[in-house]
Image 1 (cartoon, rainbow, N blue to C red):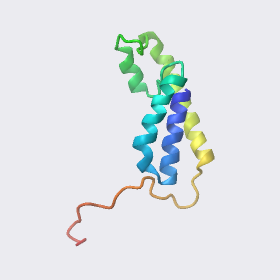
Image 2: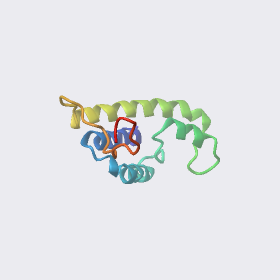
Image 3: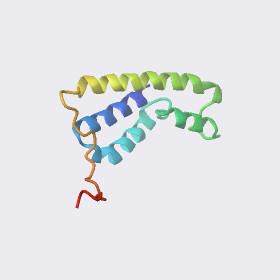
Image 4: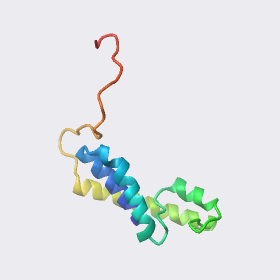
Length: 111
């Protein structure tokens, strides 16, 4: 729950503040840190949880544990979304969520 909530909060903060360019650094940093500070070794994504249930490693998970991990990831996602809304509320006009570059190809009406 902690890993998922924090991940969603980081992504929400980056998109709401227009600092999406920091995502490639901060998202892996969060997941790497969560690997050490959560008892689950950072199960923040249901797809990864399912994938890790199919492995036989120290970071794997018993297939019988997958449903409850996913339930708590959904709860964590809800908490992360609520924290994003609390700390970075939408106000008026919603700006472009990411700092994306302009279009590369121009159509026939845009020289």
